[in-house]
Image (cartoon, rainbow, N blue to C red; front, top):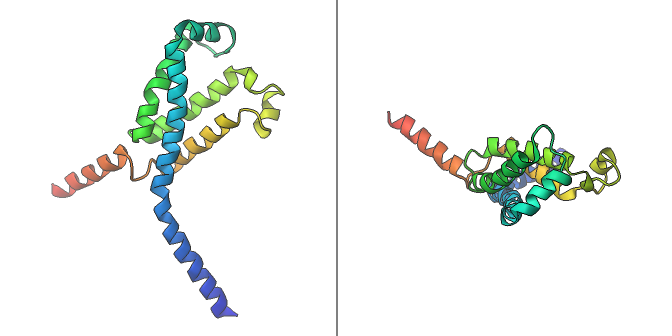
Amino acid sequence: MKPEIDRCVSLYDRLSASLVRVDPPTLLMMRLWVALAFWRAGVVKFDDPSGTAMLFSTVYRVPVLPPPVAAFLGTSVELITPWLLGFGLLARPTAAFLFVYNVIAVISYPDLWPHGFWHGLVGNDFLDHKVWAIMLLAVIARGPGTFSIDAVLRHLFVRARRAR
């Protein structure tokens, strides 16, 4: 019985080791997926400033900030941070920032949770936002991966330290 268990464990270990190669492209796809979603939202806001101002004045309930400031900041965030996330530059802090931004967006737009926030949280409301949050958490936890500017900078930094 023991040799079969050893063989199974060995097979599992080899399979796990080979799946590590999937990590970099997976993290890249997650970063690009979320970046594209936020970029598109920013472009829509930028293309229609009067509509954006109206949404922030009447529909979105952004805490603390006056609607014109929230509209400007929201549009700016959605046009700038996708580039950082997509290229993997300061990816972990950018992902953390976008995670919080995503939470604020969901809370500020009650139409996303018509059956109530807590029901929507475990139900099917605001599914896109939940998927983005999970992808952002993966980037926060794992980092941006080897296909990122952060990885290139880290490699250059380590190389420069060794050269001293």
